[in-house]
Image 1 (cartoon, rainbow, N blue to C red):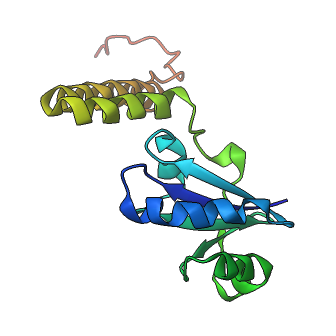
Image 2: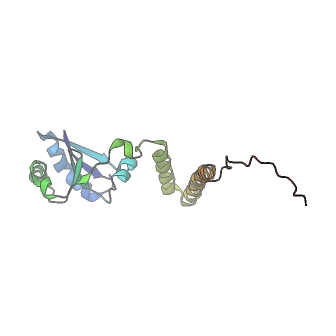
Image 3: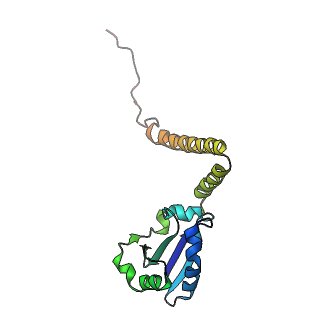
Length: 163
């Protein structure tokens, strides 16, 4: 089934303005209508590269179409019916090729982002520690792969040359 989703932030004035219109669209017969609060679903919004608010994306058959037209029920309905065909789609990445928004890595990044809002210097320290740890892990893996001792050893004993 198709989905038409509004990505928004509660503090966004334009989002609050379009919300009643978006709610009127909720009983659309062919597409499910949804809304994602990017202040609480930061992983998903980061994954989809949501640049600002509001953003309207129509998902159909593995493709995503970004809507940039008037913000009326009629315009949204036309876009769902046939308007999306005039937009160049983006491919929605398969689930197994992306880091899930609820993964430990994305959760850690979300926590760092929340701390950044609360305390700038603490967040800088945490980010530095986070990347240091990742660097250490990657360095250890690279050293293990690239620098392991050669398995080919000389089998002939070293002897002193006599004259």
